[in-house]
Amino acid sequence: MAIEAPISKFKKTNFKISISVCIIAAIWFGYDGYFNKKFMEENSDDNGVPNSTLVFNQKAPPFLAGAAVLLGAYMFAIKGRKLVANENELVFSANKKIAYDSIEKINKTYFDKKGFFVITYKNEDGKETDRKISDREYDNLGVILDHLVAKIS
Image 1 (cartoon, rainbow, N blue to C red):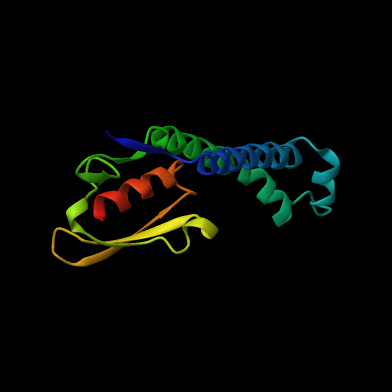
Image 2 (cartoon, rainbow, N blue to C red):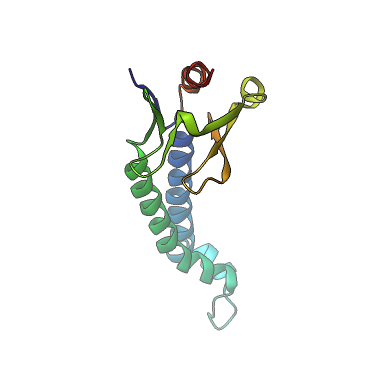
C-alpha cells in the first residue's frame, strides 16, 4: 500500500499570489507608464525627457508579465508531484528515491511545532545525507511520518 503526499496547498497558494502580484503590478506600471498623462507629466522634465521612475514604469510591465507566465508554467509543471511512501522506499521523483534500509534516523523534534522532520540516510556513495521534509512543500506528512517510523522500527 502506497501513501501519497501531494504538493501542499501552501505552495500552490503562494504561486497564485505571486502570479497575481506580477499581473497587477504589470497592469499598474503599464497604465502609469503609458496612459496616465498626469503621472507622465510629473515624471518628465520641461523638455519631455522621462526620469527614472517613468522609464521603470514603461519597461517593467513586459518583465512582470513574463515572470507571471514563468511562475504559472512552473506551477503547472509541479502540480502532479507527490511524495510516495511505498513498501520499500520513499519516492520523491523518478530519479530521487530513498530506500528504507538506508535510513539511519528520523528527527521529528520539530514536526508538531514547525511542521518538518529530517531524515538522515546513506546515499549511493555511502555518505550520510540529511533531507528535510516540510509540510510547506507536501500535505499529508503526518501519515507519511508514521509509516516511515513503522518501517524503520
